[in-house]
Length: 230
Image 1 (cartoon, one colour):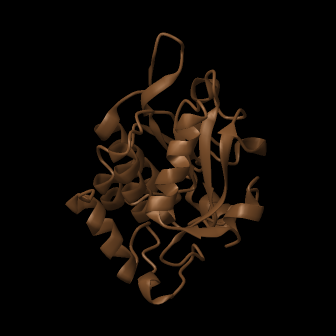
Image 2 (cartoon, rainbow, N blue to C red):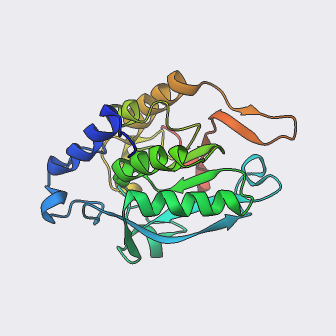
């Protein structure tokens, strides 16, 4: 029997009046209520497998072991994964099942486990990592997110995430409101980045140039420098 740490249990309780992300919808996802992310109490996995289209330091020699989750806490009008992030299609998966998927990707030779769009299912991701590590997962974990993160949730993930990979989408508040559907993106994202960096510091690579830890920030580039503050 694997003991689930208090910080992970806290995330599980959080969805009873959901405040996992900065939207703080307050819905009881345990009771089937749905907030902005459109996902209930269980994470919904759309696909999983080795991915060779990520940053080279994540792909390495065996690919990045991506687990794509349905739903998102943002509504970016330009989302390249809109068929996944803006819908709830896929298979509901328990943390144990997600752990099994991670271990299978590890066994296939993937260089890391890359949780894509995990913010709204951080409770399931955290528990899955605990279970997977207890069963032999040793490769790095990647939190691949949109940057709109709750510091309180990130604090509960400390020690579980090896690589944070947030997009930094907007330095302009009005643009974040118009194109991603949230009113406070710059201040929330910069505060979240500071917490990520506090936990694990700058990006670190091994002798083969593969990422083993730290923060890797991806900046959004928009026509006319629209992402920048005016």
